[in-house]
Amino acid sequence: MKNHAKRLIIFLILSALHWQVAADEAASTLESPRAGWNYSGMTDRANDARVAYPTPPIDRGAQRNRTLIKGRIAAAGKNRTPKLVVNGNPLPLNTGAEGRYERHYAFGGGSNSVELKSANGASVKRVQFYESNPAQQLPKLRIICAWDAPEAEVDLHVLTPDGQHATWSSPILKSGGGLDVDSVDGPGPEMFSTSTPIRGVYNIYINYWGNLNEAGYNFDQSQLQKPMITTRITLVFNENTPNEKREDFVVPLRKIGELNFIKSFVY
Image (cartoon, rainbow, N blue to C red; front, side, top):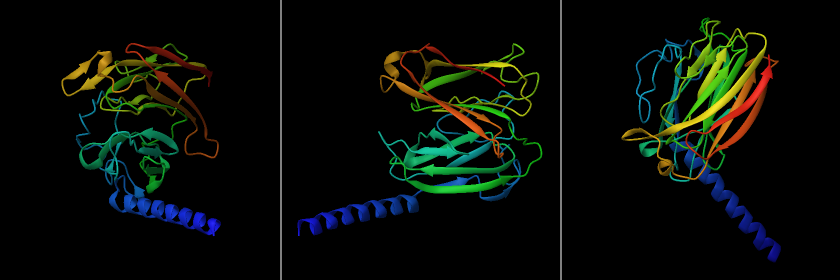
């Protein structure tokens, strides 16, 4: 009798979880990008002027052909951070009023995917699309930086084998590629991409630059909503090919101005 009662309780709990996931899925949306055969700049209107939440991203010239990922997720709120998983890369996702979100991403050519996950890790929406714009070359090297505090501004720095320094103030490399997305409005991503990587040693750093609120940028440690933010740095080699490889690094940041050396590698 006791075993029967336990099984009944487990069944009711699983049923409640199932119905909650179903309700979240019904109330959540992934409005862009659209599934199917896309051509960046036409189908997804990636070059249109858009307003991101909560402030517009700064286009410094290297952020062309981005695609806006936008929609709404149910049950978002304090201590309930949903995630975007873009081509397998998990990104924390801050939301605005009524769970609205908007993120820019520099997709490469070929098959791409965007998955929306709830705070409990359940998959609620997924889109698969093929980017057919020939200008969107496959990145042979991509470095992605994302973090879990929407009030924090973290900068990615990449030093290339020929001595160039790709960062927010100098995003474009002379050899092609560079910093595609310099996020200024929440937990990333900042993204370094190149389809023509130079052979040699690359060095990666991240810098906790400051905080952002309604009054603008500030360097007040007390503005941080929690004592530590967590960053995830992902290296992707030969993205969207059978030879794709990736490495992930999770790095805590505690103080404004903190500079962390992430990795040195030979391409």
